[in-house]
Structure formats: C-alpha cells, structure tokens
Amino acid sequence: MSDTMPSPRAPHWLYRRESLPNLWLIQIAILVLALLPEFFVHHHAHFPGQGMTLDASWGFYAWYGFTTCAGMVALAKVMGIFLKRPDHYYDDRDDGVRDD
View 1 (cartoon, one colour):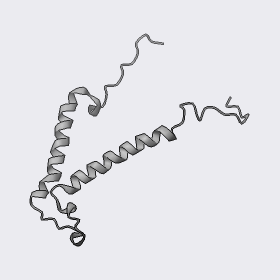
View 2 (cartoon, helix red, strand yellow):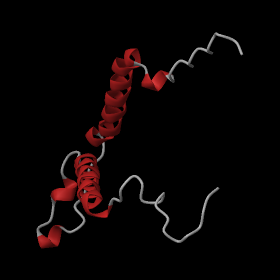
View 3 (tube, helix red, strand yellow):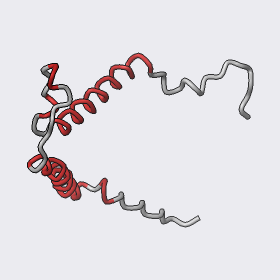
View 4 (tube, one colour):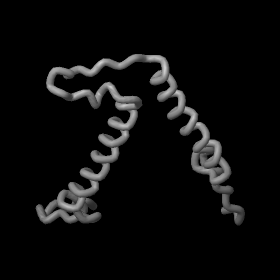
C-alpha cells in the first residue's frame, strides 16, 4: 500500500468561498430582470368590484412569491419540530431479524 493518499477533489465552484460575490451578483441581476417588465406592463385587478386591487400593485407577483416561499420554509421548520425522527430511527430493529 502506498504512503501517499489521493488528494481530495476541489469543491465544486458553487461551494467555493471566492464564488460567493459572483453568485450574489447573478442572483440580484435575475431579480432585477424579473422586475424589469413591471415598468412596461399595465396590470388590471382581478376583483376590482370587491375592492381588492392589491394584485394590480407594482411588483405584486414578486413580493407575493417571496412572502409565500418564506412562509412555506417557516412552516416546514415548525412542522419539522413535530414530525422529525431520531437519527437512528430506522437502525433500531426489534423484529428479531439480523442483518449479518
């Protein structure tokens, strides 16, 4: 057996610390591009007769999508408190079957 260990592979470029500023810039550029059409599109409210005109506001779908996504993440965190199992949950077998 040789004394030299193979060198660990370099992490993927998405996981390198020097890539973080570029990733932030790409993300911000995508967000700006997603909001850019809002300047050129006239939105109509879906339910103006009921006094609901919030969906015709500037950037509604962007902030609504972000708020909904953040809410789902928060709900998943809360649900995880009640639904998670211990790390060894599937390793504990009391049915008398042996793995060896």
